[in-house]
Length: 385
Ligand code: ACO
Image (tube, rainbow, N blue to C red; front, side, top):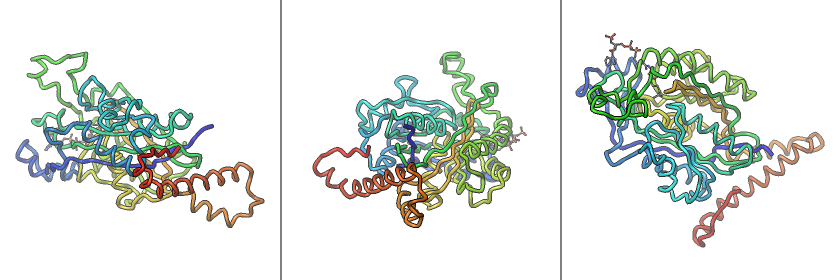
């Protein structure tokens, strides 16, 4: 039977070191004013030398697992979206799986630029919907500062480092990931590219001299693409979810550039308070941008039980993706309250089955929260399956 996949945990990590526009003014020929008016970015976080994509991911993942009240070994799958892995081999997803202590849990890395996290959510949803997995950890993480040419003002002012993670859990209750749209147009690949150090041009003295191991970007082409694709993808995902734009409580766009976000908002006809923005404080954290924004939105009370959230991104590839997620873990309660006022005779057998399952889910969730401290004391393993 098809399952629903709900977001039951979320976590984020941003390095301590803040790099301001004023500091960048001393590094390249730029100005605070240029960066703010063209991008909306005021500062970004830069990883410390000992930090890696794996260490940042583990911090975010632990927070997400904590929220979901799961142990790493409760996971069935780990999906890591990144374009800046610790190594080409082994996959950073395996490093993260090991660091988390998620013994023997399947793990893979997915590359779709800044769009990677939404691709990861869509993939995780498949594993849950077809009954193969109960709990999937999806991480979006990037340490792009190590791939940025700090002499290139076209790119170095834009990016920051960070990681975000969610746990998707199987549920019988309708909700969670309602729809998604995935897209790619490889003909635009050279608009955002690390030209060398892949198999096409392995590392060499020439690469070093020409600095082609760093990110190169045609900002205008990416800008044009992004403004066209963001609203289009969001509209398609909303349509596929069976909702309409007026049902959307919050849009969480990829945080690359305030002007791109603002244009998408206007194309969609959404009021300002329905769009989440934190690009000013983080810059473009690539695959981490959407999950970090989602976490902050939840922490700030901008996302509540039962809200419909659209997450939409674009990135290297070029790629794009959007998803509509009906948020809520404990929604069973209001549903049950509503049910009390509905004549039982008007409910179909299927609806009654859903309410019965919801009651069980709700009671199990509450009981397990109470029992968790006891379980950890006695060393018993808790499975919310
Ligand atoms: N400081 C000062 N001047 C600069 C800087 C800088 N940091 N960077 C570029 N300029 C100059 C350029 O050299 C250019 O000068 P020129 O006209 O003499 O050649 C001038 O500013 C204007 O350049 P534009 O390209 O017209 O500036 P634009 O308004 O398009 O803004 C920007 C540039 C911010 C890069 C914008 O195009 C953009 O945001 N594009 C999208 C980038 C993006 O989102 N990338 C991430 C993709 S997601 C992923 O997968 C990682």
